[in-house]
Image (cartoon, rainbow, N blue to C red; front, side):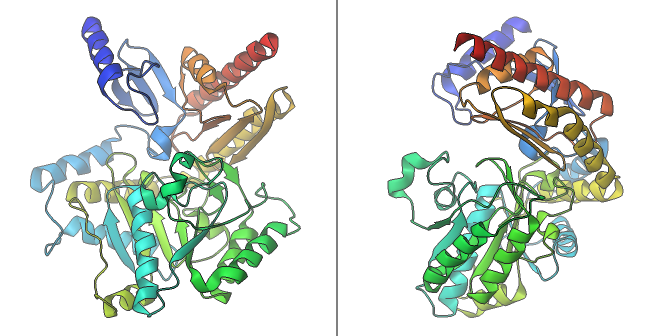
Length: 436
């Protein structure tokens, strides 16, 4: 089996694209044969504790029996059916749950395949809304620097224009308005300079702006930055004042990651459009959703051409919808809030002391998210390799070493996870300091 794996990995390295990699891939990928809970079992039978919950998604860990049971049941009856002109119970029940759970006022649901597409649909909703109101000049978007909204062309245009992953395409992307980053810190007493800068830009261009799109409270892959709820509250009020829609991208923060079921709850706001994905199915299948208000959906439906112009082939896939229902029900029946508090407390106790270490720019924790920001941006690969040696799976981005474990990770594994991260970071920094 081991020899077969070597052949498979060699083929993979030469022929298969992985996220943000070259062909052939100079960094050999690691073979995985099995998952269980928060454990990844590698091809060579080593076990790693997953610090990433597969990019935020697997909030219950892997292979949860209740979700698997629901998936098997749906596979046996109807794994897929087109959503054009047809409907099915899993889609209806999932929509009912989402409307009940999300901030009050979001009454219609559009299902798609991925987070990027959910944001694409949100953008299309916003533009069609103003077209239906015969205000086609409102065709631009506004966002804040430091954000990340996806890899498709419309969403790339909303990612950070300077330090984001997509600067290569800047000349081909639609130009939008970027306000300065919100001040860093969830609990800070702010002087509101960031809000004032946002208001200045919005007041100048609001007649051509269809919507503001941002990640509430936590800016994810664009910088892993946390900001204060009052900033989000003020943004919501400004959007109302200047007659601009608000799109909340909760692909990464939805379903409990920050300590609230949805990050918008920290500011007690309801956006005009809400995007969900990642943990919607507990990381078991790809599925996303875009929710909006009756006002927006009715305006689009009564305008020209009277249809929301989007329709994925696998829209509302029954298997994915049934999986999402099982994941949501599992989450709500679990002590998820206590688990988030348990993880947050542990991350604070173990990671925050690293602020005193040379070479570390900042350490921050919010909910089940821990971030170590290094001063150097070229140590991620070493930190990752040393973490694997310590039995932990990490996926650093630039100078950001971060963890978002499954909510139900056992405490013993959580201890091993943070210990492995700390040792890996310290070793990489020590080597760098010695060499420089």
